[in-house]
Length: 92
Image 1 (cartoon, helix red, strand yellow):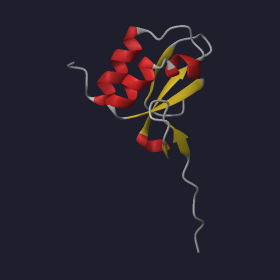
Image 2 (cartoon, one colour; image 1 turned 30 degrees about the horizontal axis):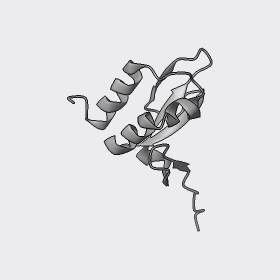
Image 3 (cartoon, helix red, strand yellow; image 1 turned 135 degrees about the vertical axis):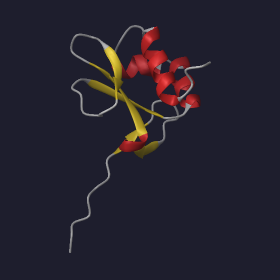
């Protein structure tokens, strides 16, 4: 009999729902203070997870939960654009 592996769960900072880690997009802040999207989910630094849903992204931006979670004063526009591109909303 094989062992059953535990599925890692993370909480979306937009909708506050706990989901499978693979379903979420990770945003990371490294030691230098640079913020970017982590597609691998394995980069070093402080991470925040968000659903692949534009509504969750809007909630996270509006409530400033990305800034609070990553402990940064202000989220850069290029990071927001990269997240929108990942969600397929880059045209808006």
